[in-house]
Image (tube, rainbow, N blue to C red; front, side):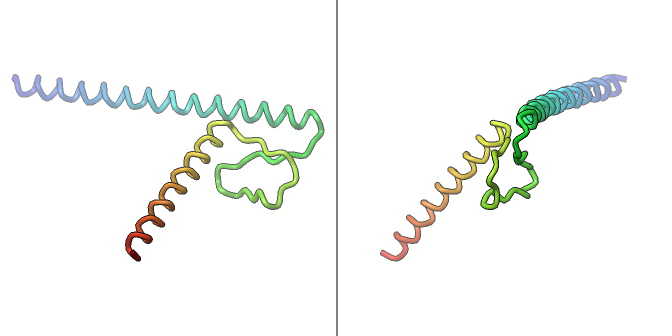
Length: 104
């Protein structure tokens, strides 16, 4: 009987963890929805001014070299891209350093 109780308590603790994970995922999706709504608001503001614009797409189908209009992008996406560029730059710098050490 005690084994059954222990098993049930373990299952309850696992369900509580899963519920917490669902709650976290919900909050993350809620935040993403808020970001999307802010982007839509920004796009609408640009449209209201009757200007052409490019709404940044997260699917890498952005070709900035061909654009001549303003680009609308959520600030968090821009910060993440800048972080990636910084990290890639650091990785390239370390690679060059290692190549230099190897040749000397």
